[in-house]
Length: 118
Length: 114
Image 1 (cartoon, one colour):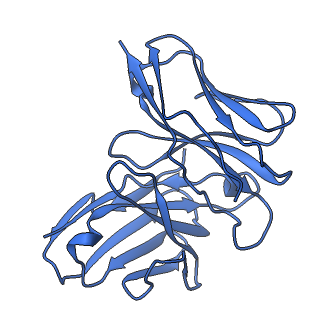
Image 2 (cartoon, helix red, strand yellow):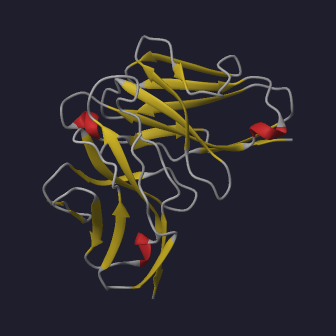
């Protein structure tokens, strides 16, 4: 199956700093990428959807100025958590979907990034 | 979005078949039924999807009720590596703001015993 690489897998940072998470589709062109957040013992919550070359669409309640998403190419999307605080500590997961009638029905997920803000 | 209902947890023994049910009584004619699973500390993994007919792939089978108000994911021989949270998700294949979104519920925690 298609591969989505997410980096870093774990990051620990001090409160107030910014953290960038990269998501790459390794063997297909990702026309749409998604960013999710998952707190312990909870399900995934969609944060935003981005199409290549367009601004991201954020879900209700997600601060777009705090969670900056860039999808500048068909293989790379980044999520920057600006001025991170302890309440932003979570498991962040990216997902990508390709072109074509079949491909657009399947989302491929990265392995996730565990962010801990001290 | 149409919602799905799954049991919180299920248990199975290794090498036995597992039937994971999902109810989606408010499904619309344009909803695909998707199944994903998430292993501990990993991102979700696509398992299978279907619209009306039963589907088979190398990982599992999907049995869809004739009225489409329920479906069952079938793992033919469970292994320890199948222990995960299984999510049944409805996805509208039409255009619009909800297009392409996968909305995850709580899923079913599958425990596989040796």
